[in-house]
Image 1 (cartoon, helix red, strand yellow):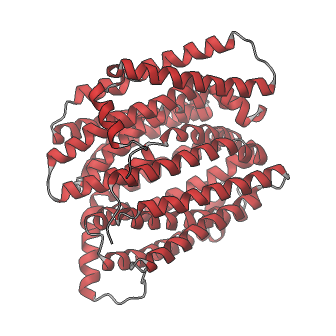
Image 2 (cartoon, one colour; image 1 turned 45 degrees about the vertical axis):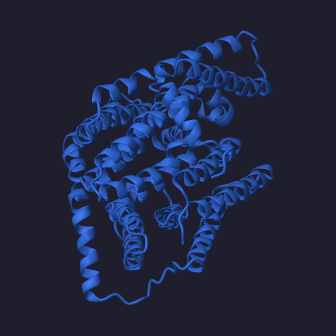
Image 3 (tube, rainbow, N blue to C red; image 1 turned 135 degrees about the horizontal axis):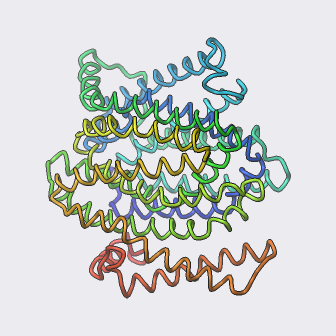
Length: 507
């Protein structure tokens, strides 16, 4: 079956993310408001802890699976092997969770103040989410992105309607929220399994694998993931410590503030998340052929553009942080403004982190992450303890720590990739820092100009927020069109991107 073109796959992923962004924006304040700061914080705390356990068990095998399947998308044995491994990992996660929640006294220590029901509800949510991620990887690796994103669009629209109804009828609470997530995630998984079977790619978990096939495939996974083992373990303890010390020092309230801020900052990933799977796939194919110039070309074409687009969103969130908290969080989240301002810049460094990581994973140079973590991880633990527990900065302290350490890591990996791909490291570093300045200036100018009208009512605040967004966007477009160099682009770049991703042309 012929796969869709890169442009077509990107456009559909972009459309899904645009629709998802619009829907998320429309419903952004509903879940935090309906649950309240403390319950919202409890959910995010437990969910984060168990997600870290799943990440530890995964040990980056899912990344290896996606990379290998991208290089040979007809490898059915690989799918069978990883399908079985997935259920083994889920079983171990269930055992871990039971030990924490029931069998051992770790419950009150690791998850203070959390009910057993909350723990198992989050566990089921994580299992559904993880299984869906693997289905998405299979479809992406086989170039079936278009049908994948069509179903995700439908799912998002339907989910939005359900959330609006639940919120409008005062029935949105933790119970209905979990049920909603189980149904929507489970439905998508079922649809993708059926679609793959109809297209000649059935998920045959019970098909026979010879001992040699199991041994060979397991060895490939081991070679790929073993250098990452210590890195993943270190990251696990660092991530667990971050949220645990925040819970101990600030309780569910600070967890809720951090979760609210992190969720909104993540909206800036709208364009990056659409490209990463495709970017990784194309890099994996080029890496398998050792085509360094091709990988360098992909990096030059997409990284500055994706960073500039992310900066457009991040700078707007930074400038409008007070209004965002007021509109979407309400009075209960007023203390989230500082952490939101800090985390507004987190997607910027994470853009480079994800795209840099794609280069590392595609080339199998995973030992780099372990070596880096030996320095960054201890520094992260010390910084988190000092900012959160000693300085008592709560959510803002964790936000500041994550932003600072991520920047250090990104600069290091960028230097390694620049050397490997024969790129100018200083050029990309200056672009990372300098290209956000024009966006910040434009955002501040628009905000102060609009504020001259002194809108004060709730309705006026919402209208003003969207007017700010419209005028900010117009000024950014004009600015980039006439002076693209200040955000790391050129007029030739713009012509290339317009020609490549034009929605008018047939794709």
